[in-house]
Amino acid sequence: MIKKVSDALKDAGGASSDYQYVIIELEGLDRALKVVAALQPDHNNDSHLNAIRGMALSCQLPLRQFLFKIQKYEGSLGAIPSSRSIPRNARKAKWAVYIADQVQSLRAVIAAKVASINLLLNVQISYVLSSSTI
Image (tube, rainbow, N blue to C red; front, top):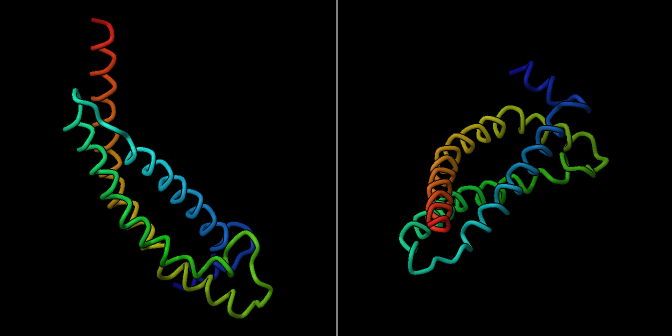
């Protein structure tokens, strides 16, 4: 735990960098899931596309809950951190000890769903391509 906290307090590569990378990753995933969830089915693919949309929606809830949870770290770990070093260092330590592991858990939960979405999208693409060549 001491090593985690020590690493987290570094200005470069510490908790601030980790937080900023996580925010970029999760917000990008959230935008992609919104696009997938907004896909409109037609009479040929309604059940398949609804399955894709449902899977995207099932990812969005835990993702948005986690983004809301870590929002309080923005002032300390964001791109423009506050100048007060004691609360900032406390947030860095808390990120390293508690939240970083939760990021990994969230990734594990979402990774399986994203893999399913990718598989379903690939099947849909194959269907559309085979239908257009006939």
